[in-house]
Image (cartoon, rainbow, N blue to C red):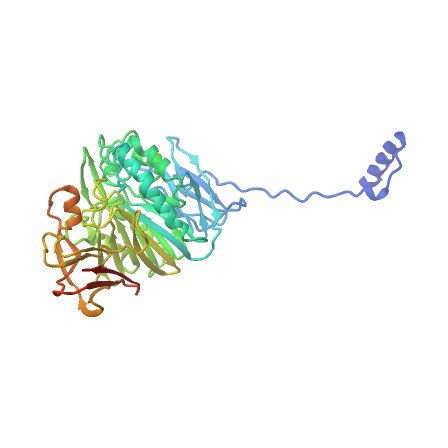
Length: 493
């Protein structure tokens, strides 16, 4: 007797014992589908770290770029990766988030793209990605430099002025993915304020990434690249414990975004503005996964190419050689002044004004640019930007000084156009008649001098002047940016 016949007899016997009248349609024998065996990443000799990258459905994601801070690899067809992770130099592993995906946003911080390593010889770290809700190549990107919080006063101004302004700005971009990159000096040598700083940015409304500035290092120790005992202590530890790796990359739409350290820290506030050899080697490997000609955003703390004051990285030429062949925008802070630099046809540096201005002394930076941040709009491979002054309307892009108020230029009407670059046009009209372009000159901004009580000697080049005629009734200034947007102000006499 076959298996099915025997099973049928047993079932009928049971039913007879309990006087159950069967409906024979109930008895269909279902065959279970074979269980799919999940493949796990095997332990490999020489590979201290292994893991898997999955999507939000649990499926492995292939081709994800992974790094231990020195070496790189990509996930295989199962989503598996393997990295050697030197136990002395590698404190974390992290991924370069692919453009079709995103990671978590926890208390305003980008989260889930890195994992901390422990001291074990073999360890596993898995990552989960989720597909971007907006699959377009359009997004908004805020570049914010130097909140530089030193005390409760600074924290209060940042929390009550800067953060609500950023949130309001992002509210004007419904349906856009939003990112904010803080360009370093989140605090002013106050590691104990990192938690309060994070508490403040929770309401920004963007996924925030962080650059490490010279005031974000623990002064007691040298930086990792200058430290012999990175297993126990190094100057980046406090920063990393709050924000993750101090250099990394991710992708959004058609843009590859890179954050680098360009502060070579030796401890006790001693540092050089310089990319260490380790940083440049890492960048070269990172960009090897990016197609030449791609649009690349590079976030740093110290600028690379300023012309008005030397606070540039010492080895800028090495950076420029590595990024040659890409279309690059560099975003920097550190200086507390505003200077744009067209380095060449494919590289543009934005050394933006600080969120704290001149260290929260008032409302402007050293160059007279107001406290604020840069708003970058990206649509595919097209990039436009404008500087947003904190607490001011979106079209507040220059300040006008009436004759007699800019003390070093008593006979002139002076205009400070902080986001100026050579593609801007600044013209003036008297009583409706075009008088032509205003004259560009260099001087120390009067608003800054008045704010701090004395001149300090920094001369900005984004100043323009014109001498009104006697008896004129009005002067109108028109400033047109590189994108063809015109902004105007009129002074009545």
